[in-house]
Structures are given as structure tokens and as C-alpha cells.
Length: 475
Image (cartoon, rainbow, N blue to C red; front, side, top):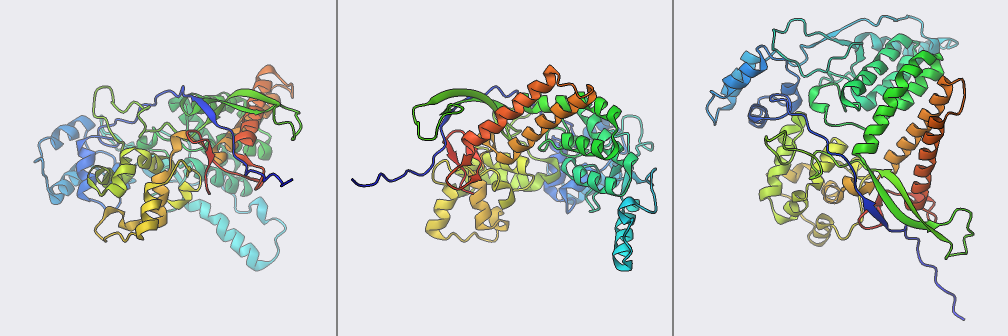
């Protein structure tokens, strides 16, 4: 008899119960939204949109907003530039360079290095810390004047580029690794405390240390940072203080970014050749959304403007995308009008192939890729999309973060749950408490979900899983 041809692996389909809570966006009338922000950013007063939103005010905010209302509706770039100069201090005036309190000239990692070239390189590298310490200083501001910088109490580390005027969430992990290697334990503890303080105030760590980042976050690495610090210092008191806040951040992802899914899988312990030994599973998984561009998010600002959210520090480029969605050629407008592009921009920071490698979903033929394949489209230089490569345009059309189980995000959350369980044991004299067991159970459930939905046994690889189509991403 003819051999039965084996079918390629296909993951099971899953039904979704979406209970994600809405998240209100930042509505500061200067730094986050409003006609003043729009006018300044679209006029191109500065080469970088981030410059304006990093400028402290010279006058009370309400007075600046009122005075802006007296400008002509079509104020020129020169008029807006003059207005900004009269009402705002230069970008970054709210931070000062500081010496690190625990600075040492002979860091631990240099011990035992005798080669003069290697040692000289190590010394030079270590000395960079002396130029990167920053603190918030708004002592010069008037009553009612404001800065977009969040009120961090401890020294934070600038990443060194000209636009780095605040802490950045993910960057802090790599900063911490360097500080610990250099034996700068007090500074390392301070930068972690800044992030923990942010959780106390916002319920999560903002993507960066300015107010316009307070409606966005990044995959939660803070639990790993606390674990890394504990392993280097054995500071159990700090762990005990941090644990409730790590749990609070985990709860944010649980409440605002997670969905319940139900699918059918092989029963635990069943043999590979028994295809009828199945069980129905309901579990929780996490996505990068809903986000500020999703209809699931409250963008009304309590009765104010609604619609696509434009990132203040990237306002003009986001605006171009928004306008193209409304009036551009159908090739772009169809995909953009769904809001998927805004979501990709917000969650991935910038539209890029790097982002989409985490979030592309094969949910049917792509408008972009189909058109590009058929017509080898050449984009005119005056088109807003001319700056993007064809591969990037293809990527932007298929990113769907609200309905994608991202392997990397859920792997990080598996790690978070495991770390919280282990640290809970550590602060309880290595006793496995019920809370510890609950987090271990959550971690195991997430691991099993990834194995069931994201793992392909034919290739031995994991791929992001698209909830609507029940298919793996093609990258």
C-alpha cells in the first residue's frame, strides 16, 4: 500500500477571552498632547522632535497654554520658534552631571589583569562612568513651571547620546551589569530603586524617565535586575523591599496585556501515536497590546480628543504615517487605517524589520507584500514612505501586536514568574510558601502554553503565534 504522506505540523487553534483593562494615555497639555505640541512639532522648530518635549517651562504651564492660544492659527515657524524660546528653557536644563558616590579608581574586574594594553583599555572603559552620572535638578523653576523629567530620587545613568536625558527601562539592565562589574554597588542599587519608585507611582516601569513615556512600557526586565543585584551583593533587605513592586509590575502585565485562551492539546503523559488522547486547556498568555492605538484603550482623555496616539518624541514622523493612512495611496491606507501600524510603532519604538521579526503574523496575504511582489513598486522620493525599504514596508503591514503571542515576551514573563517565586523563598528562610508555589505554577503554565502553541517539532524552533489565524509567524 502507498505510504501515508505526513502532514506538516500545524499548531492548534485557540479561542480568546479578552479581559485586558484599558490604559489611559498621558494627557499633559504640553508634553503629551494638545495644539501646542502639534504646532511646534509639525513646524519643525527642532531637528529632533524629542528636543521640544525635553524643555522645562519658564512660566507656569497654564499661562503658556493661554498665551499660545493668542498666536495666529497658522503661526509661522519663526513665530513658533520665538514663542518656544521665550517660554522654555533649553532641552536637558533639568538634569545635572554628578559624581558617583561610590566611585573607585581600581574596579574589581581589573584585578589580575597585568597586560598593559588590556589594563589601559579597562581603565579607560571604567572611567566612562565618571561622565555618565545624572540627577534631576528643577530648583530653578518657578512655581507652576514644569519639567517632563520624572521625579527620580537617585542618580541615573545617561546612555551617552545627545538625546539621552533620562533613564531608559531596558538600557538600565545593561547599565546595571556594568556598574556591578565596576564594583559600583550603591549606584547600581540607586538606578534600580528609581525603577521601583516608578512602579509605586504608575504600576509599571515607563519606557523612559519622562512624562511622555508614562503610558508605555517595555518587556519587564526589572525582576532579572533585582535577581542580578542580589546575586552580586546578597542584599536580602533590598529584595524584600522590591518584591511587592515586582509583583505589582507582573500584575500590570496580567491585567492590561494578557488574555485567556482555550485550546485542545494532547493529554499530559500520552504517547505520541495516540491522536485521540486529548484535553481542553484554558490558560493565560500575554501580548504586547492592547496599546494606545487600540480601540480597547481609552483615548478620550475624559472627554477630550480621541484618535490615533502620536508619540510626542516622534510626533512628526507618526503624523506623516497618520495622514498617509487617511489620504495616501490604497497600498498604504488600507493597512494603516486598521491601526496596526501605530501599534507597531509604539510597541517597537520605531518601525523596523527588527521589530517585526518579533511580531509578523501570517494571517493571510499581505497587502504590502502582494503589491510589492507583483509590481516591484518604486516609491517616489516625495512619498512619506520613501525612507523605508520595501522589506520594512512589508513588515509594517503585517505587525499585529494585539493578537500575537510573542515568544520573547512570554519567555521573559516566564523568567519573571520564576524569579519572583525564588526570591519569595529567599525572603522566607528558603520556605516554599503558597505564594511561591502559585508563581511557579504560573510559570509552568506559561512554559506549557509556549510548547503547545509556539513550538514547531518539525523544525525544532519557536515562532510567534497569531491568535486570530491560529498560525505561526513566518520569521
